Length: 116
Image: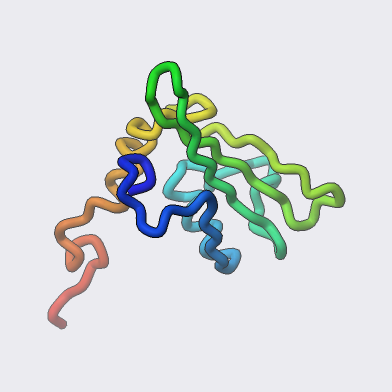
């Protein structure tokens, strides 16, 4: 809705709050869950930031993903690169990369729900 101009009321920023497991889930969807350096451990006060940018020359949209480590003394955002995408990531490519997580049609199968 933001991209096609139909978002009402229009906003420049959205803020969602969650817990460490929320961040870990989002990192998993983005392919960032396995970070051997430990820099993406969801410590208290950490944040994932998604910025939507428009290239006015091409009219294409891009997403820049940033991470703030809550235990870092300077809280400087770290630019993240999503596997399979350069930063900033083309919006439609990001949708393709994450589609298997949001375009679910058989919830019983995906959630492994049985009649037992």
